[in-house]
Length: 396
Image (cartoon, rainbow, N blue to C red; front, side):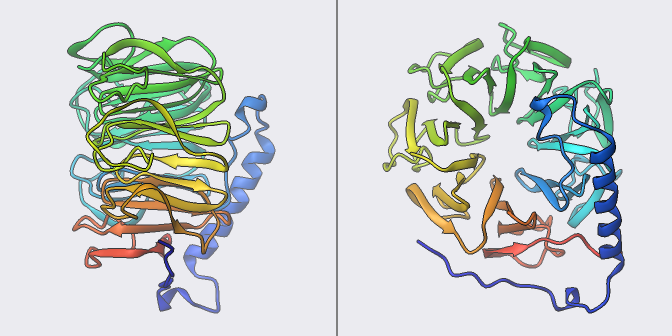
């Protein structure tokens, strides 16, 4: 079903002179440009470590989100465990600055978050299972330095109660290991409290969620952890406590659903999914209790991004297509057009809402706006938006 959009722009944002926020944005844009100019990238593998002038990345969790904006980090929504990282535990209805500059990547877990900052790693929020990686199980409502700046950290993934990071091509993981999701060959209720090397080299992408972890290693996809619903993708339902090759080549990105027990990967521009398919979340045209235990092709080409947390969605040739239960997106058994009025570049889906970043680096979000202000639209009174709303940084 193709939707017609009603773009809602608050009247107060339409001004003829520059606001304080706009002046700040211009200043940040200049600082970002200066930083890119004076900090040349060390090699081609770091080509994506560039400060984007506008929204650079969005990560949506259950009831909170974080986004990179002109190289700074902004978070909003539920804050009961300090997962917004702003020094308190009060919910925020609009984006609030957490880290001021040099942020390259961000990942939100169930109640914690981590960010790549100046090629180091910082984490905050819930820490009951050691998911922050600071050798404790104490929550923090402020970012903690886990891996020092300049250490070659490129990407980070945050799961239910564990985390992983790519550091100079190696994969390090920590936190909950009760399903073997750390990948060191063990399973234990005792969490791993500091980053532990799992794969020594060649790692370019990682995802972890719901007791399973997957990594792209030299173009191959390797997964491990719980496999009750075939979400590892090796054709079985046998758990694996060590990385197991699922797809041999051509993989560029992998995502894992936190609650719905399925996995998706982009392979040579095509999308493959597998795992539990009770509400059509695998996207293969059917919805049944039959497990899809091996990757099946869902979209044949043109896929540049995918998110599988909550309602799954993908960016396909600049359009947004969604499928699954339709809790806040299109209810369908196969990818169905949701949005093509704005060219999309990247996206992230949570259990309550979804967001995408446009080709002009604007942020648009839709779905449920809970009492915590999940959408980031500046209030907690708008209960639900079927249409994407543009999310702006508040004026000072």
